[in-house]
Length: 368
Image (cartoon, rainbow, N blue to C red; front, side):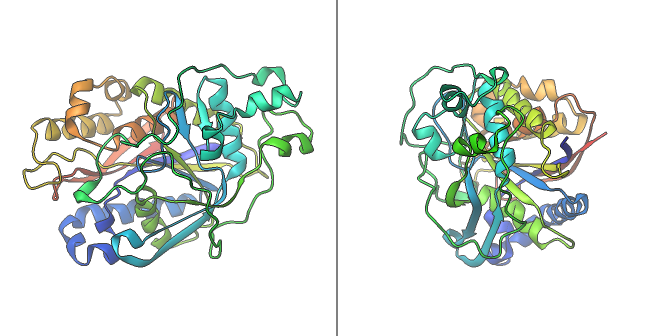
């Protein structure tokens, strides 16, 4: 049985990476210091798998549809920001991904990689037709047209005027080299919902070839984890946010929780969840989107909710405030908290800065 060891909220400004910031990172020194602290604690927990929820990963525009990379490996760099030497790669924990896709389908979501979502494929449906699925795993249906290739707005602008690079549901199946990857590759797949026959499981639930392309919302927090002292031999899972309300996002987080609890890969099962989170982009007149008084108000509200562990208050935020704030970390945080539903939470906000007109929070949500 798997378990969540702790969750973290970490921002994703590329300039927090010295090779990108070239000295500007000194202006957010508290953020940098606390990201290093969080990264060191993640290393100290020695997770088997790290789940990153990123608002800049590929997104599906259909309601109740969540993108999760299904590739064998995950790799990315910061060359778009002039840092050619920053290149990270991990093995995708596909056994967990397969379990999560099935949990999501059973709760009425569509989930998976680009090929599955574009093809409207449902794992449970495919297996059910072939008699490979146990009755308990039958999915619910979810209506709504699929907007293939529709432009992506991804729930909020990027910080500091950085150009968007992941418009639409991107074709992320391009093969990349997989040298220097963290952790060994697993060849086992989901078994909790699928029939017991190994050949049947593999017939449908197999990873896509090549590497999924990591976005900066994933790379920036992991840059600090990679550079913290200690062993970093974990697998990675990257989940995007989605176009649905906060309560539904929270419900998807509970799918993550159930998939974690059902995880049993060779006795492993320690998970850390990172919500990649920039807050309002409207904190200052000289910020990327100018000033709006709702920006600071939103950030104060968010930080207070995390400090006090008031999940209900955060989930039931005023939608007008959320829209006015121009944020890109709220939904990922709500999904993360859904993954911790029912656990005793011990939150601690490490830092918050808005130096560049964008809110950068760092926090830990320990399991009490």
